[in-house]
Image (cartoon, rainbow, N blue to C red; front, side, top):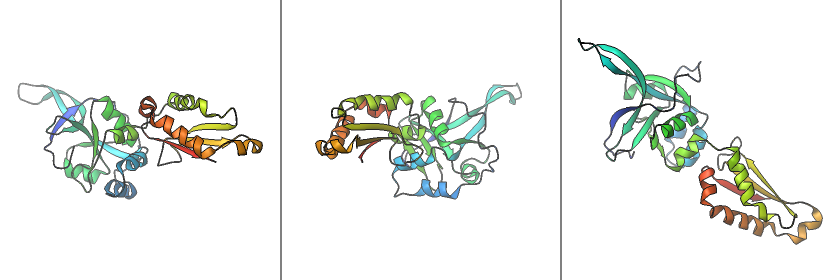
Length: 238
């Protein structure tokens, strides 16, 4: 999905986006969202987190299933459009506004959806990327870990798994380990581990900095945990 790749349009049937979200939306671009997409200095992971709840437009077009003898459509369905590069990698198209959608294809029908739902539809359909504003004004491709971050699929089991992985860091009950889902308050990580001494009397017996370093090391070596929390885990001591 690199900007210089040769691409062609293809049609896929992934997660249903047929029930419109943002029903009162007029299709005009949110300038803050557009600026975010076009900010070359912003890491794609941070862009993906910020776009989870943002309105994007997917593009759907009519595809003929059968044709009459005169060549007209006998039946058809609406399909979400993706693009394929020379390596056969597909990316689901999304747009920040009707203007950027029309610039790409004047006959495509816009369907508004939250960024996280666009990413989930892409993953369900086997796409490897979400390509935003493919012909501008600024093109952004979210793939790999960034696509998983945009999909925002953190489950309660993941938080529990982090808590279980750190179960031995309690320093004989002197340290409290709190694991929280912080997606609603942070653009840096999805899960935050907070370490605190349980009582003033035990403060002199605990080196919180060393305990936090051990916690970070444990999590860094747990590939299974990293797969469960692609948006990242932070560790802090208070």
